[in-house]
Image 1: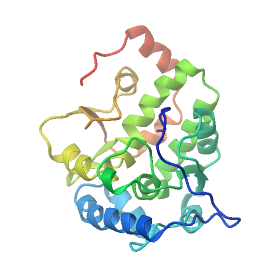
Image 2: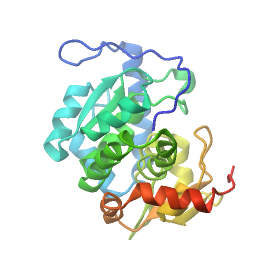
Image 3: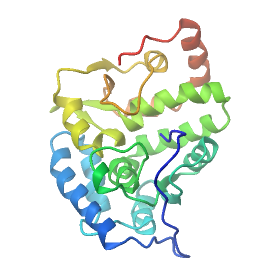
Image 4: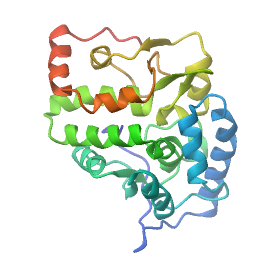
Length: 260
């Protein structure tokens, strides 16, 4: 979920074919990121994410270009990647999602920010999010979310951001093997991938829409609270709910005290 703040990064311009001119140094950063993160997600990500990762067959020696990722995504669920600047307005973000176009900023983090940066870079978008966009439930929910948020008031968009945060960015799921991650914010993070399923510090709460809408979050810390779905049918069901009505109910009930 994009946050509005000043960025120190500038996205690469793309050519007529949608390809960006990454440097050898930038490709080397991608190589280091994917080589260290691939084994980390192996026993901590859900099977649907790992299946998506296999379907995408991301290169390890260079940053994948948006058109090549789009070609594989489109065959699975009709999604494509849209090259964008480092930061885009919320309205543009929602509009892209509503049209099954996932925004991907065409820059990669610097070496001094290998473990964390505020901006969603190409590694976060492609390695973190794209595998789950091969999943029908996540693909459908993400599009429906964009459609709803695009027409919501700015106040309701703030509330809807919480729903996106605790699902698509930082969602957990029950599996026969235990709790596993499916959120892109988790699975592109070296530290949080381990922390979210293994640490005794955070609270892992049963998935409840009203509870989520009442829960504040911060982007610059390990999450103190996660919400756990039983299966991906939960996301399908979300697309059928009156989310604006639920937002109004959550607002009447009041917000939870921050857990950070």
